[in-house]
Length: 70
View 1: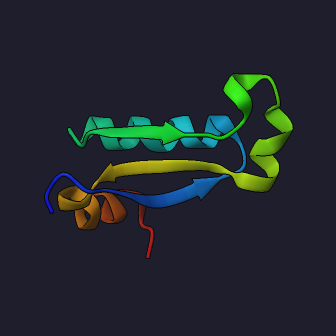
View 2 (view 1 turned 30 degrees about the vertical axis):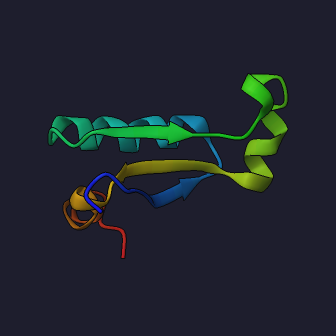
């Protein structure tokens, strides 16, 4: 389905995730970061669960090329 959202990368540092998002947005790829850190109350959870870079499935191949992620 074209509306499916997929994870294309995972980081353990918010800044790295934001840089990846900026690179994708510069290529006009819709992207967002998904975290599970209780709304920022428990940032230590980023180290165990990571910060996930999410894109639409239809943009997955192009996004992986931009980030050079296999």
